[in-house]
Image (cartoon, rainbow, N blue to C red):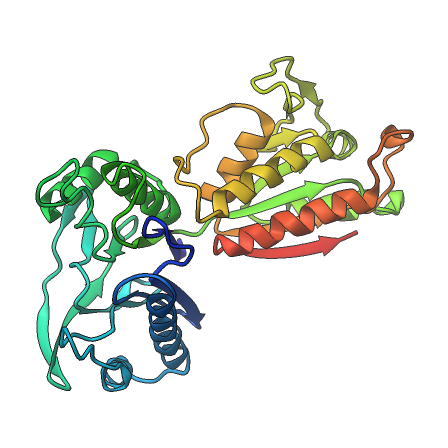
Length: 386
């Protein structure tokens, strides 16, 4: 069983501001993932620049294997101090952890990180450090499968002040909300969006502060192989399908012709559903030994729309897919469940598309755009053309 790390984040801009004063940067170096959430003082352009510099510098240093203590010391020495308030212009939280869940958490003036373990939120044990005269808190990380770390800017604990709540959303209430709403298997991105959406509700859609939530989850690796279209050379059908079926990954087939040749190779039949859960998406099919069988171009086009919405920083709708149409089932596999995705893209011209405004180029562009969005989600994606 191989474990891997999954990250996700989302932000709410201060009402009336085009730029967010918080920034999240994430980098992967070998087995280690480093995620930094920085919160610039105030809001707007200046806060955005300072938080971006903070997060990028910390991630760059960590990626070059500079000791985390030195990273924190460098930032604290580099950051200017507000002459009026006497506080640093940017605060930050750093998660530095490997695939086995071992690592460290450093926090400087951000709200305390929340540790979700065994279905319950709890606090980290924190050690106070004095770095250049500043109080920085360090926590040792020993994460287990399905554990989640949630870090946030202070916009979360300010949510609702003077509006729905008198004193903002206090930490115990945030932990209780997470306890009640995190579902088994929920992705890091889904957790971050769920908490940010609750903050937006408390702000009555007019955030009084930049609000950012980021999450890191340790989970089992899940590989998905997805076939899109038959190969150019029909003589290579068996070779193509053999490679597609190799390994213990989940298997998905998109396209009628692809489904037919896979069913033939497996010496079974292709069965088609007559249900239309979504009128824009053709029905799915069933092949014994294949996890999901869908129509091709129209379903991929809908999948692209779903992926654009999923990665949009402005979209706070739940990142779960409960509908049973082909595109939603694909989205659930690829966005929420998969960690590593391999596309097997056949470049044969589909005779069924003759006379229609659909060609091989369109299919390839759809796959490339979907791949781009999957990589934005943190997925490891490989493209193979046949």
